Image (cartoon, rainbow, N blue to C red; front, side):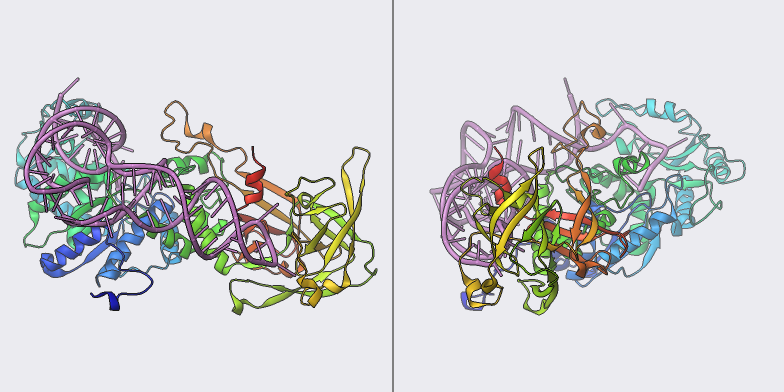
Length: 566
RNA sequence: UGUCUCAUGGUGUAAUGGUAGCACUACAGUUUUUGGUACUGUCUGUCUAGGUUCGAAUCCUGGUGAGACAACCA
């Protein structure tokens, strides 16, 4: 490419290491140049933003290289899995904007896997072990010392077959026996020390196959085979599965009857500061009532982020910015916050809300007069239009926007000072009233009738602009101010503390004294708003015209507040 | 005293033997009817010691540090 035909704004973005690998595979004609991926969640919890990273890769690679991506539920452990999760996972993937080619379940392959296991037994490569879990664990050795062989390791093939059948019969008893691959008890890779292939589960029914099966395959015996059955070419997963890869290949090589092979590649999982990224911990937060549910707006789940007011676009941009590598790091929460501010700045409708009201009376404004003023919906988007907001003699303004005596750099309302009321008039403060305790209860000002927005006089330079609401028309609202869930940057690093001890006590502050402009009475759930000068908010799922509830997505950047800090 | 993996500003990520760049953060300034946005600038980096080479973040060797692996979880 010459300089002249380069795209002007941006040169081609460099490929991440997985894209490079895929391109190499295509060029080498591996698997005939076919590209197929899969997203393989276990339906045992809700999807979180870490999954979004995997989803964007799995679906993104397929799309970019004209392949396909399937959704496959890795449902091999009925004790943890549930249809509730199957449904939510599909909803969340769709919300992110992806569509799978096919939907599969590992449980679809239970019969095929069974047959494969039987063949392995017949080949003398698998055996039934009747020891307890504890004994088997003890014999496994440690990463630095070899394990020892099970006394059942060399039992006759016929006996293995008979017992394997028993594992899946009415006589099956949980914990009584397992099927193990016969590989190498002294392998430096722990996963090769006669890994368990099948165990018995009878206590609970499988969410899809009910009580048909008593013996269920383990992850290692199910995942690679499922990939093979489906024709997956690139099996992408997170770093912790690196040590499983040799076993993944080993199982497939036992039965593969062609040159086709799926290849596993691992990338770094997502960690973000001030939150947790573990399904186990999230489940604990939900079950112990430390959050209101999986979709609590403080949760890093997809549904939590959605209820918080995050958009699919912001999540995609975030994922694009963090990249895929093999380095296990931790991303600043501020990057996530940047991507949602960036998207909402372009999209959110600007409205007025007063969170901590104080009354402002315009002493020279006529009584019983209501002016309908124009408010621009979004200065970043001319097509967004505008709406009307009522203006009267008595207004609410933020308590923070008035100071009787103010420091030099305070640009808001002070006695004797001028300020602009957004979309309205320039006013001059004449004084205030205080109660016995010295708390300001009312602020007085005079308005300049020649300075209404749009009039020539309104072009006058005034240092500050504040927002306001007509007392008569303002709607009461509940405003939920969300903040980061944890006080520690990296909860995993604080080895002496349980993660629950690091919860941020101020992660949710409910404000029931707020007011919003009347235009918001019918605001739709999950619509994105900017409360001007305050932050981005969304309408909560439980909001109604009779009881308006708004969730803070993220604050606006506030260089004044920052300056005020020591 | 094992196997595997990783190491570039505060954070994340490029540069694939040839000028260490980008984003976020922080800080300063310009513009502004949002102390927002936009724009401009500043600070800060190749873990370490050798080697190969005209030339090394990149290749080789040895250190150091970090992570993963010992569930009848995935």
